[in-house]
Image (tube, rainbow, N blue to C red; front, side, top):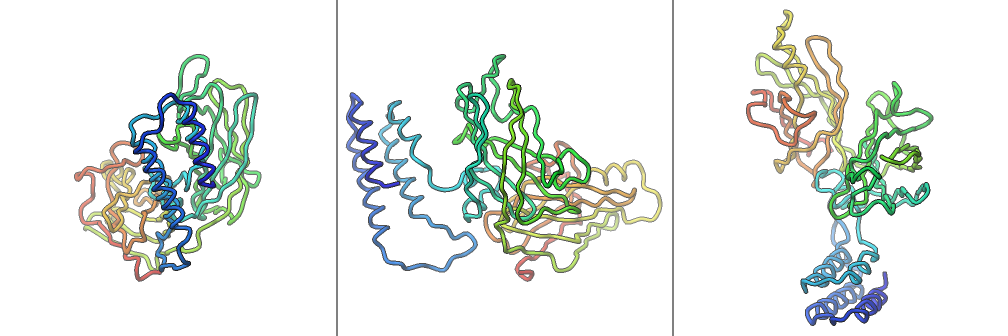
Length: 375
């Protein structure tokens, strides 16, 4: 956006107000415009880029502008409405705090902007942004309706959070629906895009290990909204945007004398980590009921080299009575890690908790997977 047009817009809003713009706001706006001009006039010098390299000047300027406008402690309704119409700089995925992998996708510009929308009466679903790394596909949907305000949907029978307002959700890829056996994806998950974007939802699909998704495909996503007698069909074009994939070169295993933990496959992108691992009892005789239960509820926690517990996303398991093998997907880290720490644990609450207590970890099975030698 032309910053002079932005200034004109803000001036028009100011003229409608009884109170003039404060000197602090005025000075901060002037500093912002000077910053943009100076940045644009600089030479074409560039610095070497790492995995996390991103153009920051415009984002910094936009951030400074936001601070300047709100520093006065007073923003009128008219000015607030005007500011909301100013296009945001950057990716919605960058603001998703709960998922480091999707944050990385936004920060590294691995996302694609799309403009696919569907309407029924006065309700509109608009797909605005997608990301796909070959394993995980995610997309942002903006929902608009007169009955939806600040993330709360009036269903006619009460107020419901938008993130809890979907009655049914099915994806169809290459003629196969996600609720069918042997489909490329098993179900679709969704959640709120966050407080900053209350009327936006993030949808996610992960591919099955035995039936991987192609590098480019179109997904049809069918959505039913609470209180609305209509099924919306979202058309979502997806294209793999990640080329650098780190893979495990050789299997690793650890044993504590009672259990064996082995990793046969591992792949890492800036968006997703996929690990195929097996846990089994180190004995030939039949397992006791307690041993069988421990094996059934055993999973693996993944930490990056900064000590971050990476979120578990989804997975499939195969059990033969003495071993359980998981193909599991995890959100990844914001930086390119030199190694990962894998720690088997016994699940107690939730499918994959955000925190794990010390007594849940299985002693003697911790594994360090060095990634620097596997590039």
